Image (tube, one colour):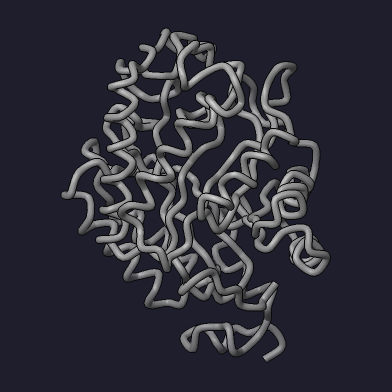
Length: 333
């Protein structure tokens, strides 16, 4: 768990990841606040190997909430750079997840591949081919801004029922053109986003994609689909898969510690690509078992890192990892 892992030019100091978790604390214009500096900086001081910033909207109408971080304007770059600099100064690699909520967005302008509403939301506007091209361009510009802000890792959000996932799943995509129907057609939007992002994101920096492995519903995405999507993405130059589940119509089904680890394991083995495992991982023993047995290359601790920013330090109890300011508190010292 404490072994460094190099992905292209970026060396991540250990295998613990802080996954993207919305803080709902940005300004109405999507700008950072002091909360973000303290929140992310604390986890860097706490020894987290890779911190991935929360879902950050590639366009204003794609926000998950009215207080999501934004990356749709050059005015967002400076604030994001401040977060990067704070985290890197304390030893963490820093990534950002760029996202579009699609039919699950906050506000009145809901868009999706098809005019099918998510339960409790308004019916979205089905994107035209021209609007799809415009949306892909938003992702490209977001990647440019992420590079300008100095991030080490870029992650494309393709999970949890948001726009890319809506294109991938037959449950939300009923198009009859080249973006719907067959597996290849439903994958087209994601591949166009990846290609656009790669045109701006440096080739020597890691590119990650987050997917929901299964929809938990008949007729939805299956584990076999996700392994195949991951194979295609690897062939297109994606370096790291972050595997979650659910969200297209249902909430994720939580069945116990590490409940989503088998999904990351299946992708790692089936697509032969590094993976991040997530899902109620709370103990060092479970995290170590996952890494030591090759079930995933990284473990993401969400709620546990909200509860305890210094989880990594406490799991390590190692003087070399602890910041000098905290050395007097090393257990057993």
